[in-house]
Image 1 (cartoon, rainbow over the protein chains, first blue to last red):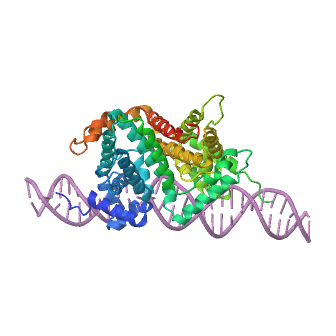
Image 2: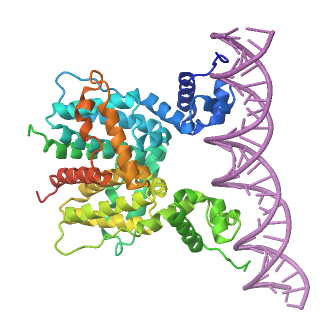
Image 3: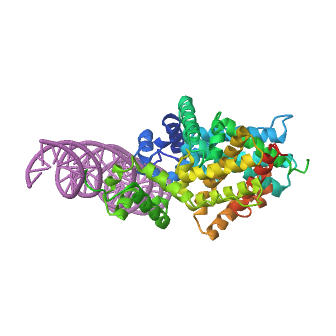
Length: 217
Length: 217
DNA sequence: GCCGTTTGTCAACACTGTTGACAAACGATG
DNA sequence: CATCGTTTGTCAACAGTGTTGACAAACGGC
């Protein structure tokens, strides 16, 4: 019944993911996606309510790269750390898409997988369900949030990133010491090292704080 | 020399801030701003390189609402907490603008004020400059990052927020226990309470972790 | 063979940021 | 006083964006 479907949700998401992988998330527009799929842009609306629905699915598609397997002998906090670092790296690779996934949980396959793995490790680490939920939210806020901050610059080549950090550092160093004394004092260490270093320090510190809340400590 | 300027950076920023305060950040477009100021949209480009420059200045304008004063007898971590909570509340009030300010530090007046106050408290709290910088970055990543996550929903009325949280919680509760056992176990506590509660738990836990790194402990 | 449904096409609408050519209005100069 | 150069705002246009409603093609069931 009805004209045979050349398109499907799966074909559209695949095409969209390929487009994003090759030309970046800003290339994911109705017209470019239609061109890539050999159809009119408006045909997409037969399968998705709007473009943001396509973006959500593509976002979850990329979350598939995050490894959440259990490893024998690995402590709960080491596993949590590994999952958060992996989640961050995926989000940094597709900054614009990450922006769409972070506001609300997509509750699609890959996101559920990651959520369940984090909760699994927290329960294993001696957190009661209520404490595990609180710890989960704290970890996600830091991980996804920090990725949101670092995403734009992460898209630039490493040399440009270092240049930006150096220029910001210099800016703080040259402030008026009377008005911004602490900034001038600390300036040499602001934006020192990589964004990954800074995130991992924050994550380790948060995990240390969380560890004190476990039943096992 | 030259035609007298009816516009100025200050007038444009004021008009833009008023526009944002009344109609939200998505109303900040060249055409609407031109209309509000009674000039052609293209006149803005005589004073700003592009619209993102206007947005940065408006973003910093709103940061003026964050109180960073010192209070006699308040511990360093209590002050840091207060500043972070204040910063978050401003960012939640103007979610779209916050998105533009977070990728790179604007290094404009109000942002510098907040940065200096946080560093001041960390130095007072017994952190060496390098440690203070690391702690500052961790606090900013959590605060600004979490705001990025919560911003969209924060724009909705409280009833809609609670409805969204309840619906997500229900979704986790109804997952297949064989595939997502931990999610089902914890589901009753996911997205429990307000986003502010969750943020403040994360902030307190991070601050507890940081406190162990101070010279004074 | 017709009918209804599904599905893709096409043209249009209402937006967006941005640019280049033009004109008005001023201060300084001859 | 007239002229010149500079500054500043206006206008029209370009190249995009998401989205919608009318239309036509292609199929399964009757």
